[in-house]
Every structure is written in structure tokens, then in C-alpha cells.
Image (cartoon, rainbow, N blue to C red):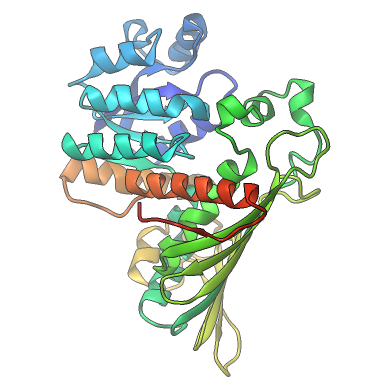
Length: 370
């Protein structure tokens, strides 16, 4: 079994617990060390709750990276955004594989440095774009690759949430406060938090490469400094077009990620709040609903499916599937499909292009290679 350490994810941190639960589901790795908080005593309290030896709970990420190098197989970085870069860098410099939460870094220069460092040292660097772990996202990807929708003409992806429809950051709300802070969040709020998932999902599923975009980022809630809503027009290397919409000020919305892909022979639609079903609309034929777990599922989708059809699977298992592929890559040395540091770099370049476009009155911006 692999051994891992966690940086961040301290008491009360939602995402750290999710990562730990997802890793536990596969039984591929066990937590042996951590630096969960800037407050060492808080880290020690959580370490005891998790059954860790006290001498493997550290005061700083740098100390953890230095003393755990050679013993752990990888580190998981689940801090607030501004700490991703230094923490990932410390681990890579110590020869430790890393899985980092998204968005990867504050700048593409930082992301490029980390990608190059991982490549030079032959380390496995990943970013947790969770939704790629859903079986029906895999099904969608494989159907597009084998030509079921023909040539892709148009892509529409949206991700509305409503939890920031009020100015929560002014109330002391912990999760809202750091995300809405320009220094800690990295210049974006909702674009980095949920728009980054759209950016990863579209090329992952369609195989399209984004070439240019025009973005309008807005702060709909009065008093908010960073964006909580945005619309992005996109163009791809094949001539296909697209529209992205993300929001965390969509009052009443919960977690409405939806991806629609339309080609010259059919269309596909997947909705995260109904994740076990894929809507397929072949040209001049009746609509078909494809169900997760059904015998006719394609191999990639079936490999990510854990329960029989009709027994719903969800977000935590999607997280576990990402880690399943990541851990398999470390254990076997053979590359298995998971979101990589290069994907994280491309995502940061996307955020930068959107910010540049919006500041330029929704100007069209060329998007360079990762």
C-alpha cells in the first residue's frame, strides 16, 4: 500500500476530509503524516484523531517535505490557493510526488516552473479536477472519440452555484473569506473555483483545443471585489465554437454543472446533479438515455463504475476514481489517465486569458499552448 502525507485540510476544512475519504475508498494508500494547519496544536489534534504518530505531524510544509522525503510515496496539497505553489514546490524539490487541489497556482509562470520541476525529477504531478472521475463523463468522452456525434460543432458548459448569492465574506464565513480575498484567491473568485472545472472538462471530453476566447466577468453581489459570475465565448482548433457560463451568485442553484456537446451527427448531454445518466440525441433518431452500470457501457466508463445500475454513485466516488488512476501511475510506473500538472498549467493560462479579456471589455484573446 502506498503512503501519503497531507498539507492543509485541517479541522473544519471540508475539502481535506473529502480527499482523505476518497483515498480510503480505494484502499491504495494510507495517510501517515501531515501538516494540516498553520497552528501546530490544531494539526496535532487532527493528527491524533486520524491515528498518526505525533512525530509525523509537522509545523511547516517545508519541514514535512524535508523529513518525509524517501518514506512517503506522495503528498496531497489542499491548502487555500495562495499556498499551492510554495507547498507543491517544496515537495517536488524533496523528490515527492504531489496531487494538488485546483486551481493549480496563481500564475502560469509558477505552474510552468512546477511542471518543469516534476518532469526533470520524473515525479508524478496531478491536479484534482474531480468531474473527470464520473463514469458517464468517461462514456461521453469515448462516444465522442469513436464518432458517435460526428464532427463537434458546438459546446455549451455551465456551472451555476448559489452559495455566494449574498456577501458571505463580510460575515466572517471562512470558506467565502479566503476565496474572495484577491491576495489569497489569486485574482479570481468563482472563475478559479468553478470555472476552472469547465475549462478542464471540455477538452478532456471533446478532444478540442481552445485557441481563443472572449470573457465577461462580473461581480453581481454588491460590495464583492472579485468575480462571482462570468460568460465566456470560445473557439477551438477545429473551427468549433462554444459558450461557458459559471456563477456562484445564481440564487437557488446548488451544483449545476452541465455539459452539452453537439456534432453534425448527434448530441450528448450530462448533468452533474443526475450523474448516472447520459442523454444521447442521434441525428433523426429518438432520444436515448444511457444509464451508468448498463452492460453496453464503453470500457472506460465501466472501469469507473462501482455499483450496479440503479444504485446511484456520486461525487466522492468520482474523487476516488481520480486517485485510483493517480495511485496506479505511482505504483506501476505506467501512465494512467488522470488530470496532470500540464492540465493545471493550461487551466491557469485560461484564467489569465479570461481576466485579460474581461479587463479589455470582452476582447478576443489568443490562448497559447500549455
